[in-house]
Each structure stands twice: as C-alpha cells, then as structure tokens.
Amino acid sequence: MAFLEVLKNILDTLGSVVIVPVMIFIIALFMRVPVKKAFISGLSIGIGLEGFNLLIGSFSGVIAPVVQRMVDVSGINLPIFDIGWQAGAMIAYSTNIGLLFMGLCIALQLLMFATKFTNVFQATDLWNNYSYMIYGSMCYLVTKNFWLSFGCMLVLLLFATVCAEFISRRFANYYGYEGCTVSMLHIVGDAPYAFFMNWLLNKFGLYKIKADPTTLKKRLGFIGDPMVLGAIVGLILGISGNFDRMLTLEGLGSILTCTIATSAVMTIFPKIASIFAGAFTSITSAARKNAKGKDMIISVNDATVYGETAGLTTGLICMPIILLLAFILPGNKVLPVLNLVAIPYGMLTFISMSNGNIVKSVISALGKLILTLYISTLIAPMFTQIALSVGIEIAAGLTLVTAWGSVDHPIGIAVMYAFISGNPLIIGGVIVADILFYVLFKKNKNKILDFVEKEAYRGMEDVTDNVSVGVA
Picture 1 (cartoon, helix red, strand yellow):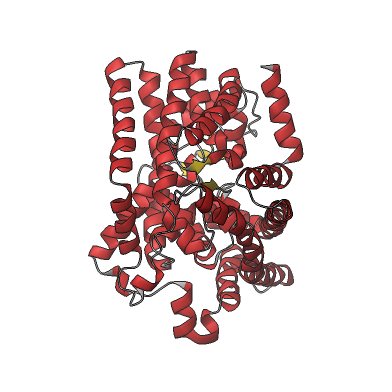
Picture 2: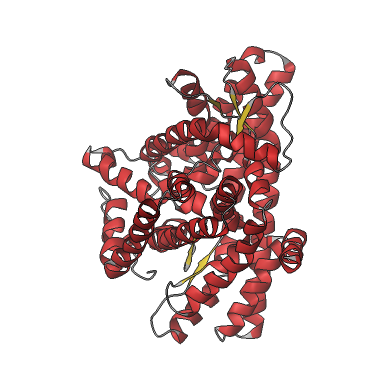
C-alpha cells in the first residue's frame, strides 16, 4: 500500500501537464514516430493542457462568485447542501480499497488495451479513475467487504470502457480531436442516455431547429459569433447573479466582468484546442500505419472541451434553470451550489451526440441533471455519514450534504447498491448485463457508430461530407 501512496503523491505532485506529455512521448516512440515529432507532440499536449487549466482556472474565479450570489439571491433554502466534487474525490482516496484499485485499474486498462479487449488507451487520463473509486470506496465503507467493493469498481470500469468506444467517433468528429475519446465514468457514462435523447428529440422534429454554433453564426451574423454569443450568455448569467444590485457599481462590475470573461473563454479556447489537437496528428497517422488499419484511440481529459462554444453555452444556460428547478421540483431536497460551476464539463456527451445543437443539448442535459437531484436526495444520509467517517469537515448548521454531480451517476449508484445488497442474484444480474453490454456492442460496433453519426447529422444537407469513418 505504501507504493500506491507514493504513486498517488507522484501523480498529484507532477500533475497532468507533466505526466501526460511524457506518456504521449513514450507512446509516440512506441508507434515509431520520429523522436523530433514525438517530442513536439508531447510538448504541444503539455502546452494545451496548461492552457486549458489556466483558462478554466481564471474563468472559475469569475463565475464562482456569480453562481454563489445567484444561490443567495434566489432565497432557496433546501436541507441537503452540495459541497462539491472534491468531497467525492476525498472519499475515493480515503480507503485502502480505493488506493489499491487505483494501481490495479491502471494495470487493467493497460492489459485491456494490450490484449485488444478495447482499442482505447485509457492510461493517459489516470486522475479520473476516481470516478470508479468513489463508488467502490462507498461500497467498502458500508459493507467492509473487499470483494464486493472491488467487483463494483470492475463492473463500472467495463461499462465506462464500452461507453468510451461508443462515443469515440462522435467525439473525434465533433471536436476535431482525431484518434481521441474520453473515458471517465462521470462523463462518458452519460453517452447511451445522450444518444437516446438525441434520437428521441429527432423523432419529435427538433433536428429542424438549427442551433449549432456554425448555423447560429451564419443566421445571426455577428451575434452568432462565439465571441459575441459568449458575451450575451455571460451578460445574462451576470445579471442573474446580481439582479438585486445591478444598478450599483459593484453589481455592474460583476456583470461586465462575467460578460467579458465568458466571451474570452469562447474566443481563446479554440486557439488552445488547435494546439492540443495538432499534437495527435503524428500519433494517429503512425498508429494507423503500424496497426494495419486498426485504430488506437487515446483517452483525454474532459477539460480539453470545456470552452467549446456549444458546450459552454449549454452549461451556462443550465445553471440558473437547474437552480430554479431545484426549488420547485416536488421531492427534491438538494441545493446545488459548489458543483454548479462544473456543469459545462458534463455537457460533452450531449453536445457530441447532437452535433452541437444547443436546444437539444439543454433539454437532454436538464433531464439528466434533474435525475441526479433526486439520486442525491436519496443517498444524502448515507453520503453524509461516509463523509464524516473519513474526516470531511461539514460546516456548522448543515445536517445533510452531498457531492451533487459527482457521486450520483445513475449507473454508478445502481451498481453500487447492487453490490451493497450482497444478493448473489442481483449482483450476478448486474455482471451478466455488463458483459452482454460489452459483447453486443463489440459485435455490432460499426453499425452502431454509423447509426449514431446518422442521428447526429440528421437534418443537415452535408451529412455525407461530414461523416467520418476513420475512428472506430
């Protein structure tokens, strides 16, 4: 266990901006990319990741106070307080089973790739393995059973691996990151639901509403430009958080700062993304050449798409709406606060599946966010006890807490409760369902991905020109 503590310290100390470029450099050399190109690829990825971190960090510093004021001004008072995703991460790393799985998960991910169980190389996004560790650690803290907890994490790992392949082509085609996907459970686990919602909304004719950034720019002129669109969204959000003092100098300053900051993110982000995306050109080309047509897909962090126009716009629109819904939804007891600012991260699957359609993405995302409010309401008593048991400090006056958006993924919770039950039939059913999910997807992979592309481009005249079959 001491080795795993050292490994965790190394990962935490060096961070993704150092570890990931080194891993990409090694992968590039392994794929027979010339040393110079491999070095440039690794360095470009490091530059891109640092750029993303600086941009998101700066934007978070502006948006967080606005969101907090939005909560305060609304006067909403609910008994379960959202204390942020960091609490979930603390629980994930608080148990020996969590730390053990961190090491074994990396080994399993490498083994699955080496044995062609999957063509997704997940070890480039080590930090987000906490997505599985959260549920396994909570299972262990309730049951004190190593095997039940470990089984819970394995089932979720397999599920997320399939989802990573499921969204890979859509992710690469929409965001322009050739040969890349995402694999963290709390994001990619939404892919099946996001696809279903896009298909359903298409059936209702919502594909006729052209609400992607490219179309908006064409139809609205300068208003549809990401720079101006960002300013408009930022202005609306700023007013929402400063409605009670918008005529004061302090309020006006906050509104205008939010306006400029949101516009800046949408303007600068694509420039950083182009540097990051360019780093994978040599690797994907070499992978195809040396793998005889079989693709290697590299898992990247969700921060790489945070500032994309449609995703950020969708996330910012959802913030005030879900806060209002939290107040009026019958049975909800969760007050979403600290994780409100993280909503744009979770828009990735909805934006990918709808090919950037903001209207469809908002509808789909709100459905998922509403469900997580109810799940967090359900698990709050258990989560609060677990949080206290691992030493998480809870502010005076709070009786129930949750990490909304981090520990309430529907599949994660369902699998965790199945293993907590200890019922062999329920656990066996979950395992069989997980294996069937993998087998059926693998057997019909190309047909499924082609259908996903067809639905994503539905209603667009240039479907055949845009659909790529290069990433599978």
